[in-house]
Amino acid sequence: MKLHEYQAKEIFARHGVAVPRGRVASTPAEARAIAEQLGGKVVVKAQIHAGGRGKGRLVAKPDTASMYQKLISDPANNSGQVKGERVGGVRLASTAEEAEREAANILGKYLVSIQTGPDGKLVKNVLVEEQSAVAKEYYLAIIIDGAQGCPLIMASTEGGQEIEVVAHSNPEAIVRIPVSPVAGFQPYVGRALAAGLGLKDDQAAQFTKLAEGLYDVAMKNDTSLVEVNPLVVTDEGKVIALDGKLTIDDNALFRHRELEALRDKDEEDPLEVLAQSLGVANFIKLDGNIGCVVNGAGLAMATMDTIKLAGGEPANFLDIGTVNDPQRVVSALKVILEDPSVKAILVNIFGGMARVDIIAQGVIDAHRQMEIHVPVVMRLIGTNLAEGEKLVEESGLPLIRATGLAEAAAKAVAAANAA
Ligand code: GDP
Ligand code: MN
Image 1 (cartoon, rainbow, N blue to C red):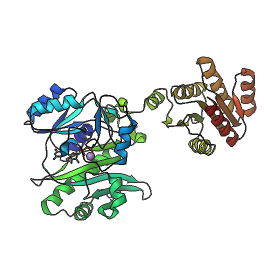
Image 2 (image 1 turned 180 degrees about the horizontal axis):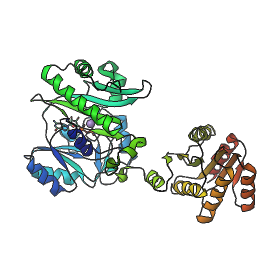
Image 3 (image 1 turned 90 degrees about the vertical axis):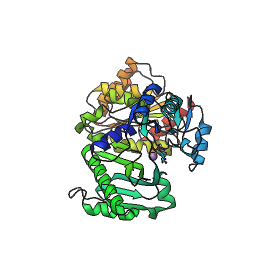
Image 4 (image 1 turned 30 degrees about the horizontal axis):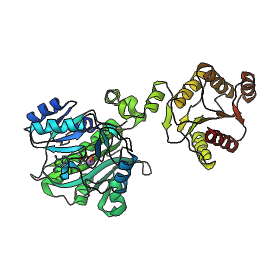
């Protein structure tokens, strides 16, 4: 689960991380009132679940694959408002009136950035913050390094640009310090990071406090990503988090009920939201046109590979798990059928603990309960296969049958192409 910048910064502040003073607004008038309290000289920042806002484009409606194409072909473009032009989702204002105007420019528009995809994201809120006089921009992130089995802090002097670009063009500019999850953030970690960035004395001390605070944020909230880009040193020599990104590990959300209130469903894929609401847990929307109903994550991956091998594209990943209730299958099909790009469905079941007949019954129930307007290919094998076959035969439904996985995938691709 991703959080908005303003939510991340509220959490940062509670853990002693220095952030600019500011508040979130959903109307231009609110933005003006906040700017007045902050003395007028503020930055107005679109709140969406994506970065690259400063260099993004605001549009009334997301048309335009071509605009997006331009963005991704020129990732180094520097035409955000901060550099002088009146575009982008991060804007400087010198007075409260200007802040109100900028908020009016941003709110209700779609912001298309290199990270949003061509459709952009609707801006519902802006963060109004006091301006910082930036002397130098840095990068800091905390991720979980699965290979080393520990949190990893990454820092770079090349702040303000995407870390993927730095990793490619200037990899030695990234300092990586693994942290022992048992010992935690020891003083040497801060020293190693500060030295790697060339920070000294008071700034090294401020930086270490900030990094330690962020490490605390990561551990207390089970984050998969904490990213501050840029972390800045100001003209007055203050070290602050100018941007903030937090992603909470979904598998740990049950331990953080208080974070559930910060979820912004408008930012999430509508099909995935529907899936969650129907209890279809392991559903991930993809770009293809063949809907997949599979039991087991490994088999689901193999099914997607086989579809691709057969020249098709899966519309989703779905592991329905060990099913003992046909309604679960109905729910899964309901989610898939809501996807307008789906042209065929492949049901691939290897009955181990899950029973083939229960899943077959689910597919049959789905046909009775709703209109299924696309061909359904069924490949069943395993526990209670004979009972399942019998149900399918007696149903008289026009299901396309397959025995092997390759055959099933080929039939699904052919059915999708024929549609
Ligand atoms: P992002 O583009 O979505 O990553 O949004 P950021 O919060 O990182 O803002 C983009 C850029 O705007 C930053 O890299 C800064 O260069 C600039 N910026 C943001 N806030 C301020 C500010 O208060 N003062 C100045 N001078 N620049 C700012
Ligand atoms: Mn940023």
